[in-house]
Image 1 (tube, helix red, strand yellow):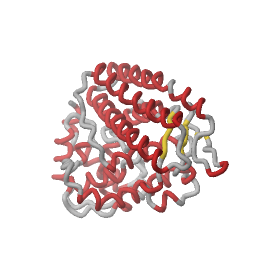
Image 2 (cartoon, rainbow, N blue to C red):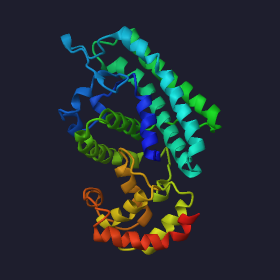
Image 3 (cartoon, one colour):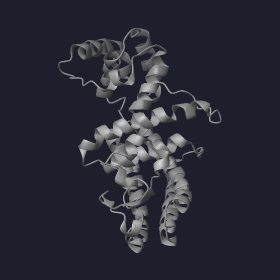
Image 4 (cartoon, helix red, strand yellow):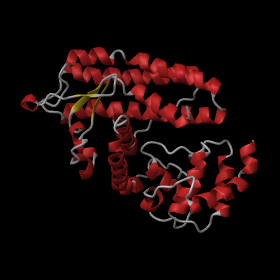
Length: 323
């Protein structure tokens, strides 16, 4: 399996027997009014083992899970899926190139951290926003789930000798975790993919101003080197910026499309807007709007622009890719 497929399988296991609540106040109008996904909003939802939604009880306006006892019982089984993920990671540590394995571990830890932060907000939100007030059993299910994620993180630190990570909460973390939920939930329904991408763009646009005004986090701006999994990612980035100084729009896409073809730059679920931002930070010039880079389709066998850029990059990266 390639790194992105493994990450997706790891996330799927986290979301098995998963209870969650997404308030409409965190989302924009496009998401809250879309009939294909708005049934998930402002309700306590349970994803079962097969990642299917247990329908919320709407009798008398109640917005919570139908079978509280069954929910608690299922949530208590979650550790077996977390243990399965640790076994998968240990197996891939032996089978995969070191740089790909480090990439997987980094992405998975980031995902778990977001889940822990999300869990903290969930307990507070459902007590205030869900009416009638959820029962103690439902609140207990949320608390157990979050504690399991915390314990899982400790197991990861122990098994893989990971340094303790910063768990500072940020609004974009919560939005990112919502997008992971939607991506996983639509795994067997490709018709939802456009909805997810559209929502991702709208949400991030909505958060742009608040992120700019938030000076407490001082996070470094990411460039494409942060998304390239090859150990010489910085050198690859430098070669690209020095040799492609006027490309815009779909030509920029052709560059990263070739990196994706080489399996050194995955296009993650729900990450196209952040990759676009990293491209702007990398080139420090006009590269065209988001839509011109991601909307068009590229035929890797016949597209003349792609084949031309591929040929150039093959020559430029020949020595690096041998190592």
